[in-house]
Image (cartoon, each protein chain N blue to C red):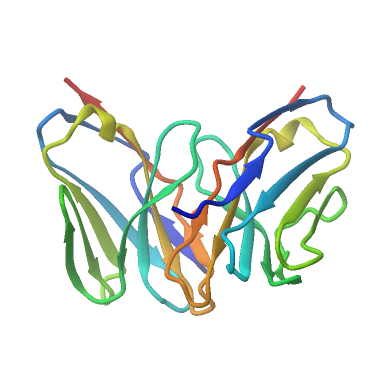
Length: 113
Length: 109
């Protein structure tokens, strides 16, 4: 069964440091999403890509967060500098053309200390 | 505005039936999803409703009423492994999902 690959699985970083997450969606899936999920809350969309283009990054804190999907395949989400409030699960998901629903990767649990 | 409401937490007994409700107000509607999320893991797809009525899949069923902005997830013959959070999500016209905060379901022996 096709999967969305994410790494690392866990990350501990000190505040003010830079951190990056990687995602490889299911082959052929044009749409890729990065979500942040704080414990006890639903996922919050950070950025949506259609191929290599950003479709929606209205909730991305652009002063510290950046995302790219240069070749329209895998994607990287970066935080610089990390803050204590960034501690959360970062989820990547992908979907095919007009797929109903997303497939999520296993997520990256970020702890900022 | 856009809003999805579901109970924060529910408790049920192993072997019993539980119904988790979800109400929504969104701009545009392209279907409603239920996802299961175990602690520390990513959400996994359970069900999708786009037309009114009941969709049954094994022990899990999902119901939708578009006119009432209402859905429920019904879990039968509860097992301990069903202890998880259940997330309701609505697909808008652009296929983007709007998520509820999730309902934490606690199963007791």
